[in-house]
Image 1 (cartoon, rainbow, N blue to C red):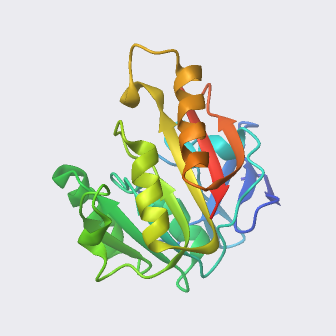
Image 2 (image 1 turned 30 degrees about the vertical axis):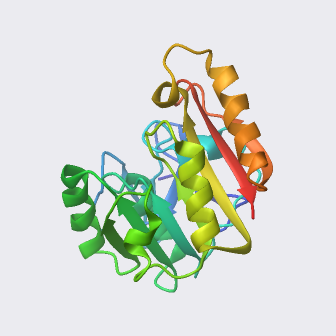
Length: 227
């Protein structure tokens, strides 16, 4: 590695590799281990993991000039749709041991991969549950600072609303990765995005910003808001 600089968001970094490419990175909380196809880079005895925007919608949003980033050391996060733990692992790096990620995943196959990641990271609590029914994890999940949703369901907005109302602290933030093709493959994505935004606002939630995730994710936006 030839160059390292702090990102404007805490616990994120820009690294310039020997091939001249500038990559987003987090400090690896599990040194020597990869979670997916990320690169591991060492500078002054500290190991960094590249944060691939093609593999993570949060990474894509950051590359697309996301302005709102409330994830900090010690944050408590309810993550809906954790999949195999790619983005969860980078959030784990950012939060440190003081934070907690309650990672909800419905797929048994993905859950197996997520558990492997969680076994090596103390701040990830994997939960095999359906995000449409937040009462399934009410005995484990406390009030949280952030709700992050990346669920391929037609009812994405409704899933966000019920989890926000159940678990998000007043003043807390939410992230919703909207996948238009999971809602309706026949409609123009722009129409779907507007319908989702209108629906979220009708629930009484405040939208702070929306970020189009092209070219990293086709027909996706990230919505960021506050309770």
